[in-house]
Amino acid sequence: MPDPAARDAAEEASALSHPAVDPDSTASYGEHPDQIVDFYAPRGGDRAPLVVVLHGGAWRAPYDRRHITPFVDYLARRGFAVANVEYRRGRDIPAQGGSGPVAGRWPETFDDVAAALDALPGLVRTHLPQADPRRTVVTGHSAGGHLALWAAARHVLPAGPAGARWRLDAPPALRGVVALAPIAHFERAVELDVCGGAVSQLLGGEGDFESRAGYADPAALLPTGIATAVVQGREDTVVPQAVAEAYVDAAAKAGEMVGLTLLDEVGHFPLIDPAADACAVVAEEIAQLAW
Image (cartoon, rainbow, N blue to C red):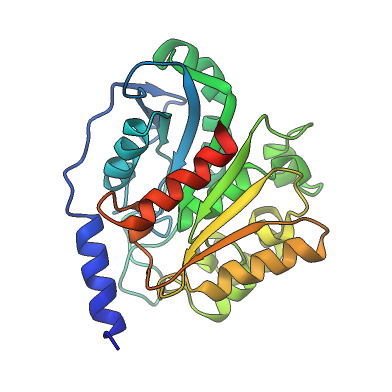
């Protein structure tokens, strides 16, 4: 049996070995330097579904949108128009009691995702005219998978200051969501200490967890009425399969069916690695919702 740590390291190295791919166009959706979207035209130039990509990296500053651009380019080469969204992540300071950067910002991380999705229809008309925003699918990897699920659930946010800040009056105009190894169930993720306490840090620390989780945890924002699929590697030790299964179970209890595709002998990073077979599976899941 392969050593899990060695396999994870090899898969991560492969996914991050591809050179970053520059966009065809870039636009701002706010004044902060991180409030930008990179646009990738579909190769071939035909009018195509729009795929909105939210990158992962545990909502931490060292991981920006550049690391996922080979995956974004892969989707563009498969005929999709793609918007690669940047957003504010945690500051470059260690988490209290830890050695790594803190994860996420409350409420700025969520402010940015909401603002970006709201701005995209207008930005696409100017910067990505090949895209058909009526056929929009949101996808995201890891922490970005969480944000993709959250973006599709803003119309069911509970009442309260945060709810009013981000809530939509009607479901977003999406064909669906494809969440890749998402941090989709906060309670289970905290139990498993996913990404070294990142979930608690995202919400501002343990003292704010209870009051804020209801606005941010996809498992608490169900049902959405939006077609949702989760793709997960069975060998993922970064965001384990148990987190995805807990989210799918929560959806079922809320009366909603979420598709769950489990990939054998696949860990966390092959889902966004153009050299991996798992990446083709992801593209097909997106295509089934988009076309």
